Amino acid sequence: QSVLTQPPSVSAAPGQKVTISCSGSSSNIGNNYVSWYQQLPGAAPKLLIYDNNKRPSGIPDRFSGSKSGRSATLGITGLQTGDEADYYCGTWDSSLSAGQVVFGGGTKVTVL
Amino acid sequence: QVQLQESGPGLVKPSETLSLTCAVSGYSISSGYYWGWIRQPPGKGLEWIGTMYHSGSTYYNPSLKSRVTMSVDTSKNYFSLKLSSVTAADTAVYYCARQVNGYNSNIDYWGQGTLVTVSS
Image (cartoon, rainbow over all chains, first blue to last red; front, top):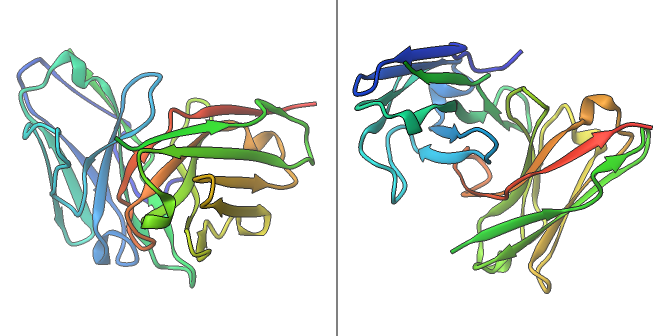
């Protein structure tokens, strides 16, 4: 059971847009930055979005992030077959005295 | 370009200690950032194990804290993970990674991952 909740899967046709939601609580998303990761089949995760909406160098602007309250959203526009992957949200959770990084359960993106 | 490479046994017996090392190239660990571990059981999601600074300060997943030890060797530019009393539930791909800071989930560089199976 993941601390952050994501839909198991989303799908769309090439060129279309998908959004992936990530919901949490005041101890995590509500008071901390959110990151998003893309994991292609058989590969390590790759940082897509950090600090809610910033893209690392080399990440195309087809990928965007936003946060509102206790939820965050990843958007992918102009969907390509190469975007088929698992996507994870992550954030810091301070509900326990020590705190920890927590991830969502992951969302599989399928390009129809 | 920062690169991380995990190494260690691919098979560990139940109740024994899992030991992995991560060699870092392209960046000096003693220059900053946090260095840590994330694991992923086969077919499942990501689980953060913990992270540490080169000076020795650590942050561990509370659910694993009693079994986890992390250390860093700045002279050889690598860091290590030890997980004691392993069970089949610890079977996973283990990734070493660079974390931007200790209170943030920005993990900007990852190793390729190494599968560790716990079995007798």
